[in-house]
Length: 82
Image 1 (cartoon, rainbow, N blue to C red):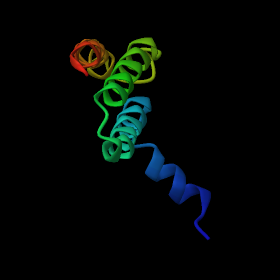
Image 2: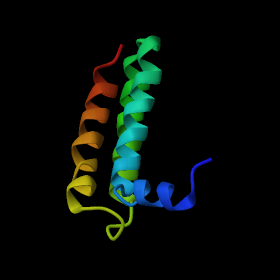
Image 3: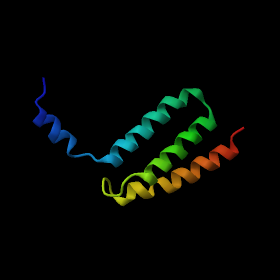
Image 4: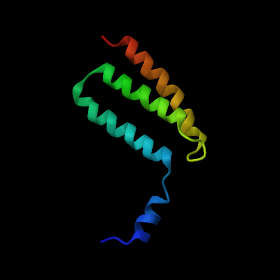
């Protein structure tokens, strides 16, 4: 069994931006077999809103600014989907 100190030192290297980015990638990989543009677009738009609404004290501003293109790309993909 791992000691809490080992787990804590591993997790101190990451912040909320890393966790959200990992969640975005896992969601996109999970939706890829569906081959639906609307599902991919909704995932991108929702994660863009989550990145924009995340507290700015828990992650660097670059992750917060990542939400703007994600929302834009998500809405563009939604409108272009069949």
